[in-house]
Length: 350
Image 1 (cartoon, rainbow, N blue to C red):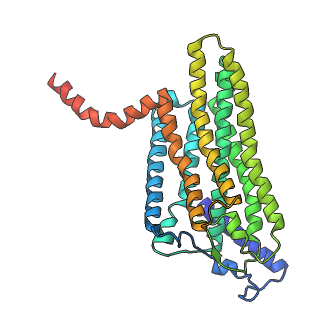
Image 2 (image 1 turned 180 degrees about the horizontal axis):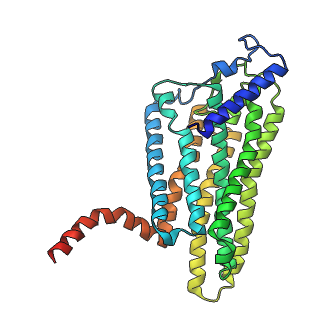
Image 3 (image 1 turned 120 degrees about the vertical axis):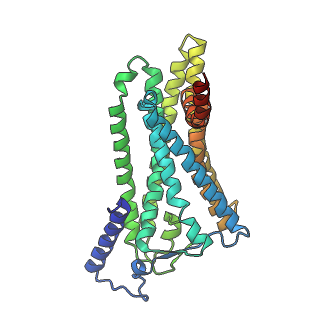
C-alpha cells in the first residue's frame, strides 16, 4: 500500500523529469542539476555543546504530545456525548498536532544523533510540503474552533441545526483540500529549481528559506509567493478569529444572567489561550529572525523548533483542563482501569 508521501515524491520526480526533458538539461555536477540524485544534507545544532540533550528533550516533547493527543482522541471516540461538532473540531486539531510533530521530530534522531544527515531530493520536498501543510492547518483549525464558538454563543437555539456533525465534517474536509491547494504549488515550484550552490541545508528540516538559498537561479518569484502565502494563512484565519470574538463579546455582554455570561467567557477563554500559544511564538520567531537578536543560527533553529512543537503539546492539556465536560471524561478514562479491579473485589465480597 503506497502512502500519500510516496505519491508526492513520484509527482515531484515526474515534474523534475518533464522540465529536464523540455529544457534539455543534463544531470551533471558541473551544471548543478543532479540535485534529485544527490539530495541534501541537514546540518543544525553543530555549534551547540549539548546537542544530544536537546534532541532528547524534543523526543520527550514528541512522546508526551502523542500521549496527550491520542488520549483526547480516544476519549472522544469512546464517549457518544462528546461526539458533537465542537469536539469534532477539537479532534481535527489533535490530528494536526500529532502530524506536525511527526513531520519534524522523528527524523531528528537518525540525523543528529547517528549523523545520518543525508536526505533525498523527493523526501526533502515532501517534508517541506507536509511541514507547511500542517502548519497552515493549525491556523485554520483554530479559526474553525472560533467559528464553532461564534455559532454556539450567538445562535444557541439554532446551533444544533446550523452546526451538525455532517456540516462540520464537510467544513473540515474543505479546509484540508484548500490548504493542499495552497501548499502544493509553491513547493512544486521549489522542487523544479536547479540546486548547484551547495547541498547543505542549514536547518533541522527542509524549510522554504534554508532550501531556497541553495538554488542557482532567480528565486525572487518563489520568495514573493511564499511570503504572500504565509501572510494569507496566518493573518486570514487570525482576522476571522478577531472579528468572530468581537461579535461574541458583544453577544455575551447582552446576556442577562451573570452565571451564563461567565460560562460563555470561560468557554471562549480556553480557545483564546490556544490562539495565543500558536500566534505568539510565530510573532516572536519573526522578531528574533528579522532583528537578528540571536546571532547563532543553531540557537535560532532550536528556539524555532520549540516554538513549532510546543503548541501541539499544550493544546490537548489546556482543552482537557479547561473544559469540564472533557476533563471529567479524561480522568475517568485514565483512572477507571486502575480502580476497576478494586471495585470488583468489593462487589464480590458484598
